[in-house]
Length: 410
Image 1 (cartoon, rainbow, N blue to C red):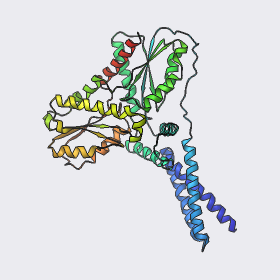
Image 2: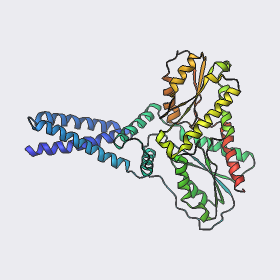
Image 3: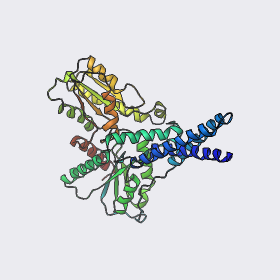
Image 4: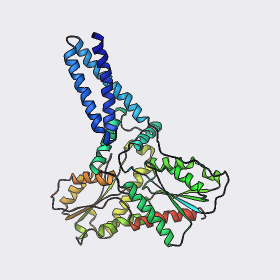
């Protein structure tokens, strides 16, 4: 009997660690049951230690329970982070050297974000950074990071990212059809959602495309664009008689820069431009990542600064124009909003400037940071969001594609 209590303590302590990871990472529809089981196991452990161990056994039981809890937590974390990407990749049925039927395929490639909570994209991101030796969130903290991601989904309800990009792709295709182009085919692809970029390229090859243009709907060159390019290049398009061209991301697009000013002018309702604060909130990455991917921060900063220059040229007060960061870098949005208020602004507009379409960042994270500012409630704050399905944005994406087609001789 004396061994049974030790055995029970060992099993329950390990189980507690396993259940805690499951609670933090499991789908919202299942988290209630797992939380209940976690609390039950914790309660039983407390009762078992309090009633079953006395004297010298008590501290040993407590230490053993903690060590085994951490062990169970660590093992379950490793199992969770080892999940394989389940996304479908079709079989490539096209014969080697087949030149195709002559048409062009545009692969609309962007970041992607599942409409509802799904941690696989961040599991893939953790694996990538670990392989590259890039420091990121410590191993044992990763379940809590995913837990925070799930909480964001629960607050917002769902991400509109996928639906918005589908609308943008439809608008892009419509722009080509209006010009009389009835042959170019368009395919959606996401780094972190279905379908993957390599899956979209394979489908285009199977459909007979002779020319493939990858429209990179990102702001900057980063690990995200590199990962997608790596997936696409692994298909070896040229072996199947097709050409492959990348547009590059949007950081140098004059058309995209102009969208910000035009959107602000359409939403300030006659307020004197010199009394309007304009805040462009970037994503941001850790300084350590800048060593590996300096283009991410350089291009994000350069793009937004050029946008602010356009605002100044359009009559906005330079003292009320600023950049801020969502993560990792300074300044944060609230700090700049408070400075604008001290300057006497009467209205604030802000953008999730690096986000291509509505997402958890633009729907929740960035607005929350802006609204933390300690300013009077009667100062209107207007969220002008991500790029989204704006005609100017679509024209800018199309311009990039047209340039890539021209460069490839198409």
